[in-house]
Length: 408
Image 1: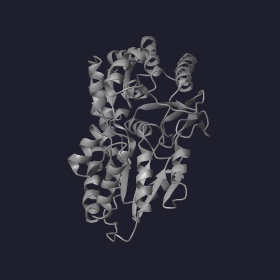
Image 2: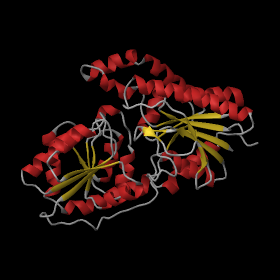
Image 3: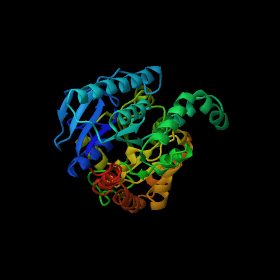
Image 4: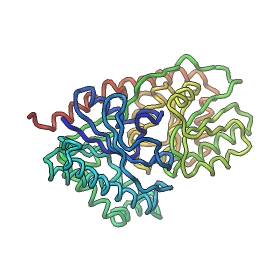
């Protein structure tokens, strides 16, 4: 089976970063004997700069990576990014059709596009008309629903205005979910969302996968004179309640508590966060780390933070897989599916997003009850073993995809 995967946001092979969803899926497809082309962007979404990779290359596992010229953008929200996505999809269509017509690439049997971006699902349907391939929409994020939070007014006003303001995106979402041959997603939340749009196609849940466990459940110091090592890994954008985290940690440090906060990642609010933490040596920024350095930082931590606003519509973020693979207890304000996992396994504690006092209350519970760290670490590692193991979930995803394509 010839499979095309399109996602412009994930880390790519040979970048030295943590292998994410689509690289892991490409590996699993290749291992199962399928020919795979991973289409992505020549622009790094995480770093907001051009990638230092050849436009076409073969990953160590044997699948092909093809980079699509992409209009750069500096902010995750705005007209520039929307324009970039439209041009990205149009360029992919033009490149792919010319390569197949020239005989450089065989036509695909199946095309899987991530959601977002919005426009690539329609391009995949064009390929289906031309070549008779199957199309799959893999939901990574709830677009346009997660943009409702940018609208003014209380929640009920946002829910009322959202479908009107983002009606073009709603039409695209309805078409994507209803017209795909199958829909997959990184959370049940997204599969339910597709159903609410009228999707009747086969659906498949596949959480983000992890490559290995790094459970250091026995590493914790129960000595309260030692600093509690708190970690955040991820983007520093408007969907994240990081000002509450930095402010709360700083206030506790100034009150004499022993805490260290490490933040790995980058984003549009990084400079403002650095300014908020200025002069507090126990709050440290590491930037965007290599996979090896990120794993070491996780291994050196005691508690992880999942500070995502509930109205971000995120179901199960990448960081949940990373934290549980490291066996870290979690402090979280993301409700819904993530909260359900953390509370069901008793692997962490919830706080109210935007509430510094509530965050401090929860953090103090870890500072002065260190014995809970080992117990919750074991529970966190269990989440990873039972939900995120790459060797379990991606072969199952591959079988689901293979069943969509009739045998020759």
